[in-house]
Image (tube, rainbow, N blue to C red):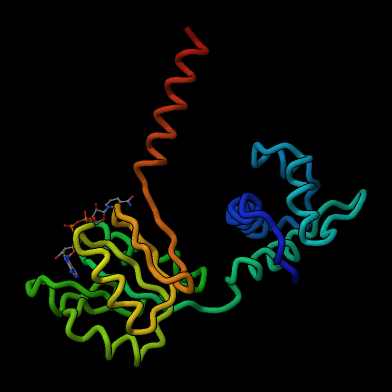
Length: 213
Ligand code: NAI
């Protein structure tokens, strides 16, 4: 599967295709036309054809898309055919909520450990995973083949902790702290800002009100 040269915009849309195709599979749907997929996803059929053509003709005239094949191939492009071990740094509200979310495991993201500086949290377990103190971090990363670090700590501490993760061999950061991390180019950072999504919602509400005056 060749995914080089595919635009970031297309890659960003893939998780949504993956989710819809997964639902179709669960419902026993074996094939789907771009126009049916378009109705479900509220994306134009031509956008779907354009996006999926990037991966070399998954669709067939008059047959549509083979759901299982497309699901599997998109999963490969997204790197979901292999497991990714991750740890959460910051076992507060958000860190615990993420730790409690079981569906990451279904996608191959395996929660190995949770870390915090608050001694009152030491030894508390979330879904069987123990909260540990930061002095155990280095050896834990080494022993558990940790690929991803999730930052759910105050933003003032994020840069320091991100550097610590990178120094110990973590190559990817899922950053929830509202700050830019400026890490070396070979470290992959994905920033998540729920408030941006909320602002988008707010914009859509305003637009709706404007259009329905
Ligand atoms: P919280 O205060 O409930 O939890 C933060 C935890 O981090 C605490 O348990 C604290 O002891 C721990 N901590 C502090 N310094 C640490 C360090 N150096 N190393 C390890 N652990 C440390 O806060 P909450 O609500 O869980 O939010 C966490 C972070 O996520 C905040 O920066 C917040 O702004 C951000 N956030 C981001 C969202 C987003 O959409 N990106 C949404 C909600 C929160």
